[in-house]
Image (cartoon, rainbow, N blue to C red; front, side, top):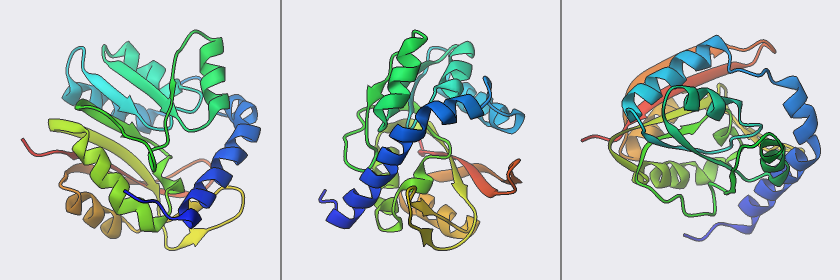
Length: 202
């Protein structure tokens, strides 16, 4: 798959911005996922099953992975930002460098988790990325993803893409996934999100 120079430039700029902001980000996020995300993560862990193998795309400081591991699953922690992986390594958690746009994901996994991550995938690449994720799941495997609600894209240091619920749901379905559950929410900063759990049909 060929990725356009424009997409690579947007992705690189976002990654570089997180490299500079990683320590501040780590200080801002809590030690545990919020209650809403905990509910979704528990559902995904249940689908993955005991000793299930989960790929986390964009682990960041690794708090969601920490929580998942308390539920008895194994998490492959990945991020495109080296500094986030260094922060995790400093507390004994090992992750791998992975860019969901350009890299092979491996698998099959029992689940894939991408919370607050695919908002940085340029709109033109969203279908390709979702197809890649769907292809990395075993039959019956689950995909947990959250997207900013809205329309259009913003540039700047952090390239951000907004999706209306039905439009992103259509992309999930086009990639071969069935939507099991979704929820609309407003975070503490007043930003609107759509969160989905989708499964690869058995």
